[in-house]
Length: 301
Image (cartoon, rainbow, N blue to C red):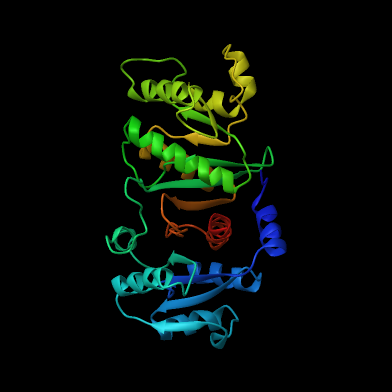
């Protein structure tokens, strides 16, 4: 499994061909900076969709020649999103990316019934890929932005999406911790029941390419010492590739806390689509948006 975004970048440079990205709402300084960085690193080419004058102004600020990129002038954000996904459908680009627009607008383009970006029965889910610098490894955390209060069946799909992502990151058999406030099943806490069911389902082969343990409190999932201190014997404890969050509130607060208080590098991903989609937060740094581009390129392979 890749240990860092630097390793992913090196792999893509050495083994991949440039992917084509359509940046919808390219008149955004941070998203455009990430795309320009990826272009300069030789991993993508880009079509920039949005307010042309502003895009040209931002490119000049970045020291980039506008002539090196295709720019399509579009006023409304709905049209920006529509064009980006239409280009993917027609094979003109490989990956659509969200720039300056509402998440709801971008999501409507993804979910458009004629687009074919979400297979029947699939569930869209978000995952944050975190570079755990202390242990020199990557961790997938899901769901942090799409599914508010997933039930057991939805958690199975979220976990399956996360396993596919971890597989792209190099994990042959993922180790997943189903997170809950405590590590014992408590009928009053639904997250502990769902976690126990996920663990048994994986044990019986109903969830593929993954070993699951749960419920596990967060300390036991990320620290072997914490698990030992609590008398928990688990091959997942302190070694989880995937942290399956009990709900969006937990996942969102947890990942933003890590990014803002620890400055750990991260990437946001959208999973469950027929082709990779880059949908980062407006507050993500250009560096983390670049990491999201790298991760999407891996997903496209």
